[in-house]
Length: 366
Image (cartoon, rainbow, N blue to C red; front, side, top):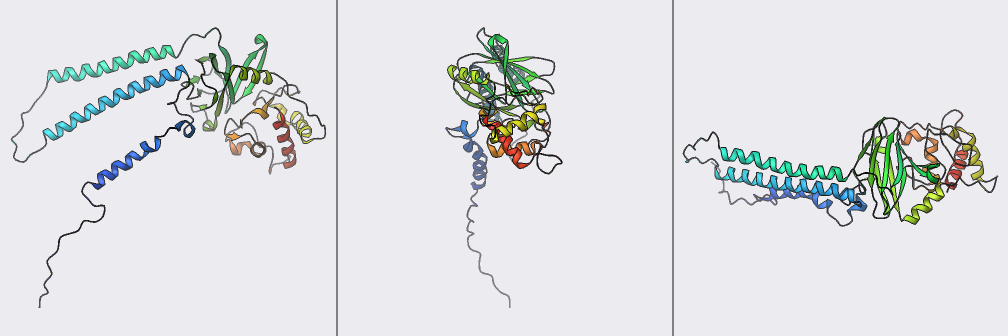
């Protein structure tokens, strides 16, 4: 006996299976990154943003970027709107006759040649203007700062006393608000690129050549920068801070940097023991501390190391724990570092106690 199946009832749609749901879901997922980028306090979340310039140079550069961006958006919208209209207007229809074959249209061909040429010409005019505006002559009242790219850290030199003396620091460049700054960019090894996004665009440091970057800081603050040209193992770890001071704040900083390092007051303290290890040990071969016999130039100046916010070219906060780890084994933190491993499991290395003394001395250098 044959079984008789009941007639199938109407199918019920599964949740989420509405015809237009999937495209809408896909579009929503694509928009999520855009929504994530929205927010009022984007500078604190993205400190290397170029969309919050604090100098005239930065405003010129972002203005040129916005011009090309909006022109591109307009061209894109018109292009895709035209494409969409053509696809809909001339879509395939089973009962439609064979369309008329067109092999050329002089008007259209002239239009889509002249209009792009005009757009490119407009961009070219504003680009040339921006190039000259961002490479001005050195103002007579500019602060000169010599910037030397190392592997992988930054050295900054400030002439003082009419150029007779030089203040040398590392990885933190200090500038005054309201005064033009002329960066004299050099490298003594490979190519580097100086880049503090909120201040100005990138400028390369090229072997056997001197480049300049001139801008005027407007707002006090701390601005994050880094090398923007691949330069070897620790390129990604070659960061810096630009600290913009009020004019008086900058002068106070410069006056302090021009002084020699302070002597420890207690000869039996950890600071004094650390000074002896630093000035009479391996550190003296590579570093300089004004007011001591140390005159090494291979590594950063340590004269006022304790005042710096960071160490290891801006990748670690300057505190006792990080400094201890850096002295013990710098290459483990920064691959390729010229500073060797000084402690840990190596023959004749520094003991943990000795490293603690060195940390105490370096942090006292205010």
